[in-house]
Image (tube, rainbow, N blue to C red; front, side, top):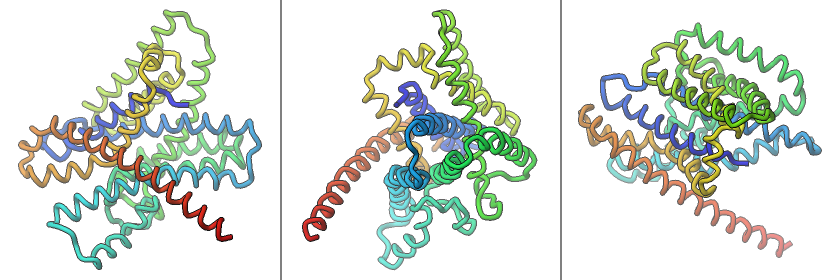
Length: 361
């Protein structure tokens, strides 16, 4: 079940991460130095819904192939958006900015080199230290891997995961993160990247976020209590924004992650006035905002490449920040429409082909 408050927050934070990356390319002055911590919000929110869905699934008979079925459904959901983001990045970076359509052989070489990214496994160690064609898509790949590992643990060793694997992963993961010299997603650690480890750790934190949200949801509050929770929610996100703008070290990033855990727990508990007010908004609108946030996240990197090309002077580019945000919104709307239409007609084509095969049989 969708949470309209979370959908609105997703939209706001997607714009924040877009402008964070834009500022990083457009001016020597450091704006939002810890803007990358916004990713933790998306992972925590997704993690809460992940565990909520698992708890509902447990009440039914779990099929033997459930981990496979779960990850297959997630792949089918992620694939059109990831493919759309890769194609958009390719059209901007390798076609438009390179002077036009390449030869067929060049296209084949590009496709063979980027097939791992399209299949959501390029972050799993198969790109030989190369950069992703569509950088922000690393989170999709990392979440895909982390969710598969966790769902396998929950099906086979649920109690062990909650009591042992989850807390140990947080302790060891953040211990490594605190002491590692370089924890950028491009810094390789054996077969995988720290990005995958980072998402897995935050998904473990999301379990505690989910349990806290349940406790708040099951508690009865007076109107003053609900008001207090609402103020705490606003204060949590406000504190995170301050850390994003002025924090400079990993300690601040860790602090922001913990604060986000409490903020997301309050937002998903359905007990604050922000949630109550968000339910008054048409659900179609909030659902669209959530989908637009996905579009903004997956396309803004390619749009930044356009701006760096047309505005080589960083200060000139910086002055285009509001035009950049508007273009991100427009592209996200078009992106969502194209994906929706493509999914609709691809399903019709598949149904038609299946019908033809059945008739022949």
